[in-house]
Length: 275
Image 1 (cartoon, helix red, strand yellow):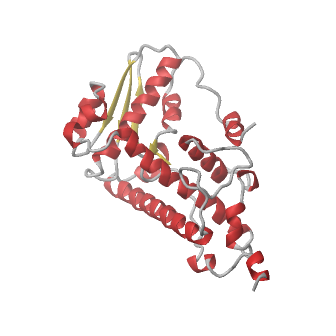
Image 2: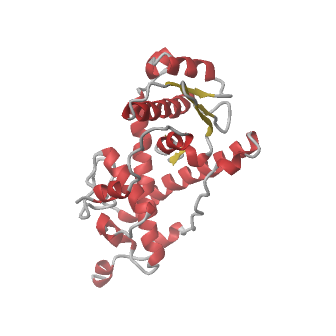
Image 3: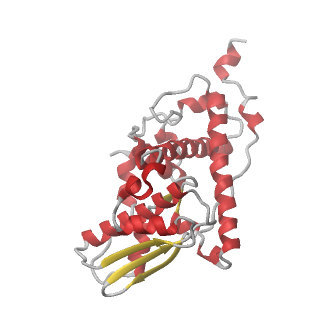
């Protein structure tokens, strides 16, 4: 059994049958991520409302600013529609579905594109410079890098005397069970990387191991800090724009700071022996 299958085994059971409730809809929206912040839109408070009636399901989304990237906004709205559509299909539920993004400068265009099922290029035309798949892949790579860094930094916190170079030999099975390992396994699976316990943790999106482990960790940390910083910033912006919306945001674990210098001051024991 791979680590991914272990994670999936512990995942919530499939959505039960009728009656459909708001909780069922919000449950499937939990897998929709902000591509830049690498967090579920439900945790970020981006889901304004979910309404379930006998005839329809209506979902409204909001973002921290009216000028958030239209491509990011479309991606989250489109993913939300896809997840709820799949939920209704699994339940053989004929209800109509409406997913709308509110208060964004491109709301009319995005909502019209979603209603017409026009797709990304059909919605933005010549302004869609990259395909949605290309855009999604860019952020999957960043999310994988940040997830690996969180896991390896976690090992450093558990054992501050550990030589940083040895982190290049850490396998998935060496990581403590928990949220960080599960998040890394899912992000590796999304990139097609191995998810068995013997798989090396510190690899790039193509599965290549770095020549310089401390430098690779420093770069990964830069990516992770950028993601975490943007997430904190956007949460604050949303609360400012929509007073009270902070109550809709899931608490976020505070990251303990690990000085970058600590990644360059502990050489590998084997190298010490040769000095």
